[in-house]
Length: 353
Image 1 (tube, rainbow, N blue to C red):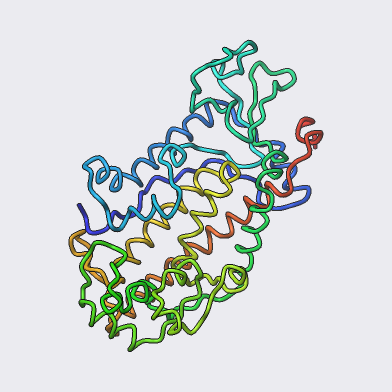
Image 2 (cartoon, one colour; image 1 turned 90 degrees about the vertical axis):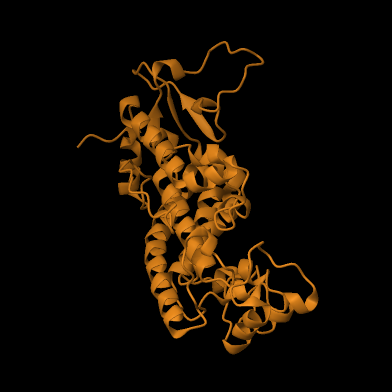
C-alpha cells in the first residue's frame, strides 16, 4: 500500500443546487430537471468514486483489522457506506424517473424496501409532471426544513463566521499530543493502540516546550485534565461559532460532518469532496501526532523540530485553501434549501424570453 492513499481523480461535473438568491436562483432551479440518461450515469460514477475513496478502510474491515488512521472517519463521523455511495443532486434539482421507477399505484402493503427507490427516500416528493410520461422526484425543501431547519441555519451561521476570519497556523497539531499528556503518570490508557514515537516522557516534554493554541472545541474536549489549563484558548460549544477559524484541521474535517447533517440537500460531488478532504487531513493529523504511524508506511511529521513545524504549516495552508472552496459550496447548498423555489413558480417552468 502506498504511504498515503492519495486523491481520487474522478471528478463529477454534474449539476449542483443554485448558489445565489433572487431571480437568477429561481430561474436556474426551475430549469434544473434531469432526464434519466443524464443523471443515472452521474449516480453510478458517484458510487464508484465512493468505493475508491473508502477502499483502504473497507479492505481493513474485510480482514478484521483495525485501521488507526481511517477508522476515525467511520466512528467519530456517522459514516455509512450505503449513504456515502448514494448520489443526490441537491436542493432545487428534479430527477425524471425511468419507467420502472414510477410509484406503484397499488403497492404491496408489506413490501421489502428497495434502498434505491428514490420515491421512498425521506424528505423527497414525487409528482407526475403535466404533459410528461414519467414521474419526477425532488427534495421536499419544506418537509426537510420542518425537521432540520435549525440545523441548516446553525451550519450556515458557523460556515459564514468561519469563512469571515483569517486562518491561524501556529498550533502545529499539538491537540493530539495534549490528548495523551501525562497519561502514564495518571495511569490512563492512551487513546490509540499505537506506540508513542517519543515515549511518554518525550511526549510530555514536547507539550511543555511548546505553546498550545487549540481553538476547536471538539478537539479540546478530549484533552487530558492536565493539558486543559495549558491551552491558551478555552473553547466551548456555545462559543464555537465565534471561535472556529479556517486554519484548523479539525474545523476543516468537519465540513464532511456538516454535509452528513444536511443529507440530501448536499449535492453528491460536494459530499465526496468533503469526505476526501477529511480523509486527507486525517492522514496528516496522525502523521503529526505523537503516535508512531510507520506501520502504515507513512512518514511522521516531526512537529517537535523546526522542519516538522514548517511541513505541518505547509500542509495546513493547503488544506485551508481546499476547505475554503468547499465551505463556499456548502454555504450555497444551505441557501438553496433555506430559500426554496415556491411550487407555483417551479411547476410553471422557466419563463419564456
